Length: 191
Image (cartoon, rainbow, N blue to C red; front, side, top):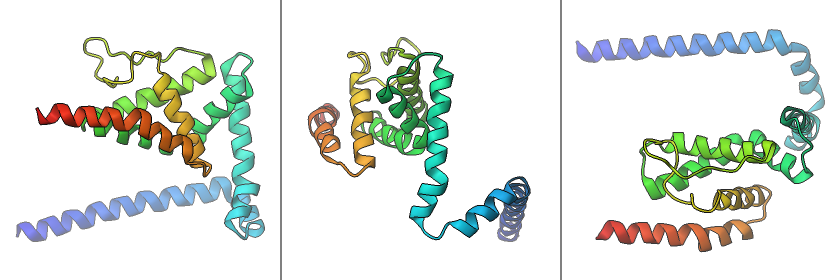
């Protein structure tokens, strides 16, 4: 009886999610039908998608960031802020995995989100990265917080290079900054 109930519950949940997805797809087709039609007739390869669809969107994102900042951004600041926006999951997931390796699961998503947002605000508004956790600030990592966030900036620079096929800066960062911290943590855990 319980097995049948569980199967029925799973089926009901599946039906609900499928309905939601179908509704969202229909809404997107209604809202963006002309764009979808135009794209589907012009795009024949992943390169076409990148050049005809994503490249203009990336340029729009960078222009919006420059306007949003309310100040004159250096090209490098705008580029880095736009990279964070355009590749948010990539940046945030990489930071989250590093935090997990050092601190475990506790609040790793909050911590990675805080660091990602702090990096964005650093490049857009010139704000200092205040990563040092005060009492009860569970959303801040307990490492790389004595150097005004420089390690986090270095990590972002390394991730940008890695994303564009240049792995040397990332590998050097891992070798000189992350691996020694990880080794220290593992040594402490063995005591």
